[in-house]
Length: 183
Image 1 (tube, rainbow, N blue to C red):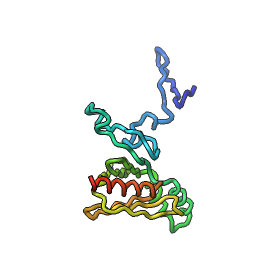
Image 2 (image 1 turned 90 degrees about the horizontal axis):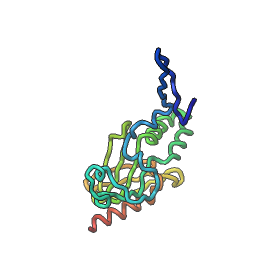
Image 3 (image 1 turned 30 degrees about the vertical axis):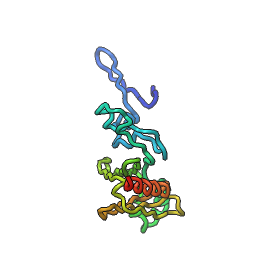
Image 4 (image 1 turned 45 degrees about the horizontal axis):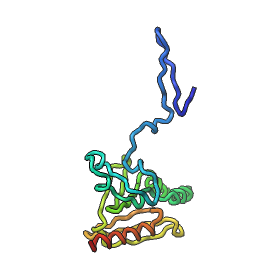
């Protein structure tokens, strides 16, 4: 008696039979860990209203951001490290790749760069493009994915690991940094 992932358990009582649903896929009904899981990963998006819009009732165009990229670490990094993880020396790097794949998310909008990490998705770092001093790229695995090293004006170095489309994203960060500094 399974219909679309729900089984029913029958509870017998003296008066009648009660049917209680048992969800086989409990993650369907769970609240998402972070706001970023609601948006599919695509390179370009139309305007997306932020949660402040829904709460304040303001027009979406006044507080919305255009998302350039929203996604996690490149899947090739995880696959490569899992294959190399069979050697005993590569195990720490494999564990790091697994944690990046499951607990790290990057978001580049027209206003800021956001990095969300941690088990619950609560560790969040945001910075605007006007504080970017330098953007460098380091290609990995024949240029399929790479690291982006962003140096901020206060001397902070932000290292974004295993970023897909890293050249396009780095060019976008350079362009937005130049655009915001000239304005």
